[in-house]
Amino acid sequence: MSLTITLTLLLFTATTPLILYRLKRNRRKRLQRDREIWSIGIYKGPSPLLIGPTADIKNPVFTAQQVTDVKARFVADPFMIEHDGEFHLFFEVLNSKREKGEIGCARSRNLKEWQYGGIVLRERFHLSYPSIFLHDGEIYMLPECADSHEVRLYKAATFPERWEYAATLIRSKKRYPPLLDPSILHHEGRWYLFSNARKVNDLHLFTSDALCGPWTEHPQSPVLTASPHFARPGGRVVRDGDNLYRYAQDGIPNYGSKVWAFRITELSKDSYREEQVAGGPVIQPGEEGWNNRGMHTVDAHQQKKGEWIALVDGLELKA
Image 1 (tube, helix red, strand yellow):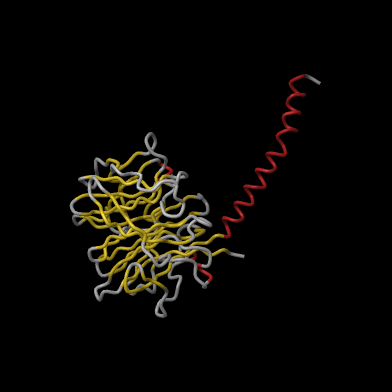
Image 2: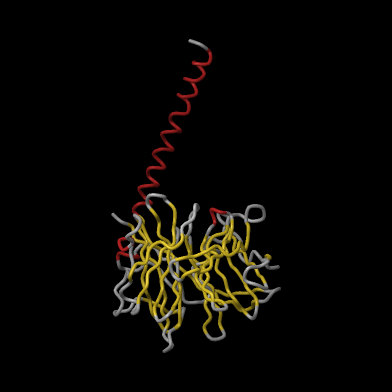
């Protein structure tokens, strides 16, 4: 037997247990992942900090089974906007075939029955967290595009079904790790953007004079470091009277376990301060099946009569 064949056999014998271990570990991860199902619900309450399930809404209001144009494993990260007398909901659709997130939409007139409108944004990379907002008469979407190493802005070409790339706000290849769940805010004439640096659990803050930039990192960024509890955004920053609140999704004891709120007490081009809101999480796992494992996104909106509604998502661990 030649020396080359002998060395090859020895290498195969040495590495086979490691290969088998990795295959088994990956299979366990896939099985666990396939059991974790996210759905979308609606909570109500007197403020963006005090929201919960109500008798008039049967949750979840939207599930993966209502997605008809792709095979969806789950739907999550809900964001809503009102337009022409209807509520328009945008969310991540995890495409089971591609194993990548895409952005889907649905519409409703009463918040109870939702009509699915299809996948409206698909890229070669994973998309999620479709934060949607109105500015100067145009509707924009700022989805998470971390796998592209960019924070990318899209504009509605034909709302709600057609979107076009508008600008890259931040490139993370050189200066930052990939940025997760970008959450944008227009405050006192300036733009601010919160985003979580993947793996290191830092919360970065960026600012700009104009929506399309140039964007620079805030002097006090990162505003949180090494915080798996509070550094990842958990929904759009909301304004309630004179108060600004930032939602943060908790990664302990598991990904997307609950959402906390922080009141932003100081925000300017040069300064930033916040304080955690007392009273516990804003949302957390409930007793119903659809959200018994976790909740990680809040999109809160004040209605004309003063009541708040919030699009939320819930994680169910299937048997």
